[in-house]
Each structure stands twice: as structure tokens, then as C-alpha cells.
Image 1: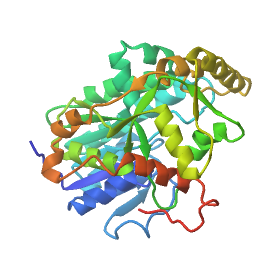
Image 2: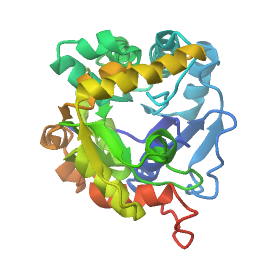
Image 3: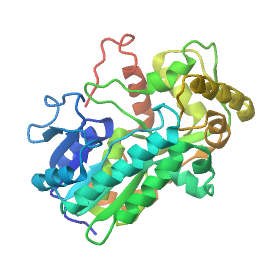
Length: 347
């Protein structure tokens, strides 16, 4: 059933996911009010002129002020595309940080939208939630970030009602580019291997992945066709980490390739990573030792047909986004503009 969506507020509208969702909404005739934190990048020259850009700290704003602000937009739909994600390493304890941002503040902002009279709410979550359910909660017991993500789903779905439908999108590895931002894969993934002769990685694992255009399709489809209280796993291609890493290296012209090692051996390295964090008074949202044995050595795959069918992709002509392997290559090359000075980032 297609629901009415005329104007959407995107919380995180200048972010990687929010930007592409805003462009797709506009192409389909939906008005967009893009909300961004102060100090975020200026996309005024990249967005269509009729997209309203509003810079406000949604996290520190009072709920009553947000309700009034949302009411003035006249929007019927909220897309919550704010982080943080697991790449952020906050002061210890990590759980307090992630719970505050992903649960308490997310609930406040979405509740303000509900009070303001909006009818639809799409919240971006993680595919760690998908697999935590499948694995009986082992991930949320081991990793503060996953625990916060599961609590985010619980609290936000409880906010839903027949008058305010709340849907969750559970997102995997995402590739793609946008103006004014360098992809984060260099800083948060490839940098770990930059000084190594070989790329050592837990063997046996794999992941679902998607291009950012596919995430935009999922957001728009959920806004129109999603049902209250539902969680939708999102992905397009499943690949082993060997395939993923080798695709990255080939794109860079790097001769090194994936070398699988025992997850237990990799866990020793993960323990030392977290030990280093503790000496600095910071903590990752993922326990790196358990990350090696519980996540990176498992195949976290997704069947895209379930979500594509449930959200009615065919009526829009959606395909799940651009080819993932081509997107990986484009993304990784964009991480190293000094190596590929003649290439430009597309929108």
C-alpha cells in the first residue's frame, strides 16, 4: 500500500546517506527539508535550489523547540539519518555515548516529529541488529554499539502507532561518493593495512554490501510503502571479505591481496587494539577480539528480495542501486585523490 509522502525532513541531510536520499525524493516530486548539524559541509551548490537547508543541533535542542520547528516545515515524513556509527571511538564507557545518541536523542527527535503531526518515520539502523536477532542476542551482549542499536529499534518501534508509522532500515557495508566529502574507507579501514606487507584478515567471513544509491531507494520506498513496526534488512550483493579486500586492492593497483588467518589468532590482535584504547581512556563500540570471532569470520549475508518485495521496488523501477563491485572500486579510488588526480567524484 502506497502512503502519501509530500514533504520529508531529513535529519542528517548533508550526510552521505541523507544527501542521496534527498536527491531521490526530489526526483520523485517530494519536497525536502534537509536538517544538518552546525558546522556541517555546505551543499547549497550541489543540492537543487528548492531543497531547504537548515543547520541546527538536533541533539542539544529542546524537544518543544524541535516540535515547533518541525511543525513549521509542514512535513509529513521524517528520515532519521544521523549517526554515530561503529567507527566513532568515544570516551569510555562507549555504551553511554552510543545509548545517548542512538537511543535517547533519536527517540526525542522522532517523538518531536510525531507531536508535530508527521505521519511517517524512517530510521536508519545497522545490519548488526539483523544478525543479533539471528544469533540470539550474542552480539548485543558483547558489543556496546550493537546493544545501543537494538535498543534504538525497541524504543523507536514502541513510538510507532497507526497515526505515526515507524520503520527501521538495517544497513550493511555502504559504498559510493558524494560532493565535498572524502569516503571514510581510507581512514577507518584501509589505513590499518597501509604499513603492512600483507593484508591479514580473519578467514571464513563475508558481508552484505550496497551502493549508496541503493540505500536511497530503500529510504524512499520505506517512506511510501513501509509498514509500522517493521525492520527491513537492506543489501544488494553478498561477498566474502576476500572478494571485498581484493577488489579494493585491484582498484588501487596494489599488488597485495587478502591473506586469511585463524579468527582466534586475529582476536589476539583485536585484544591489543582495545588495550591501546583503554590506555587513552577511550573505548570502541565493538569489542575487537570478539569482532574477529563473532562478526568478521562469519558470513553476514542478506537476501535483498525480501525487502525489495515488501517495499514495492518494482513500482518505482528500483534495482537496489548501482553495481556494488564497480561502486567499491570507485569509492576506494576516491579515497586517494592524490593517486588519481584526473578523476572527479560524481554525485
